[in-house]
Image 1: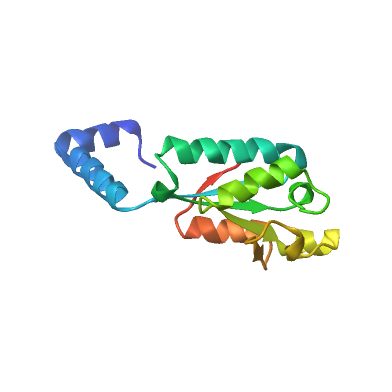
Image 2: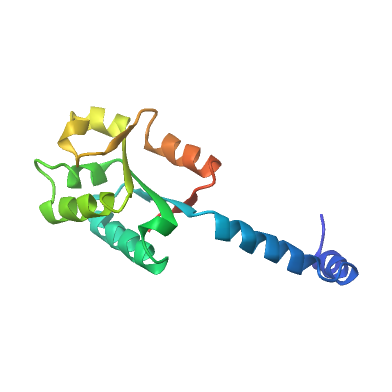
Length: 148
């Protein structure tokens, strides 16, 4: 459709336009928190994802500077089960939830595992239409998607 020459020509014809866009973007960024949805489905990656989330929070200067939602489905949910899951992972998740990280659990996975939401860390929310639907909804709301 358009090639690079078109865009270079446009940039040359509109001096300073890029600066205006960049400035507006910075102004919006200064007024809004970053919003990120992390996605985990593999049981063996839950600890890694929680570490990424912790590093992300620290990297932006604390939980007051970011909104993070972790959506879990599939085997990852087993790792978060407070009865039979990995207790160190559950402690890490609980600590992150204390920093305002939201945990959304796939309703389809809970049904397949015959598990109740109450078996997961306190404060976990149900993704009633499913984990992947919840992720898509969050992306439509402006959340950036990360799947480590």
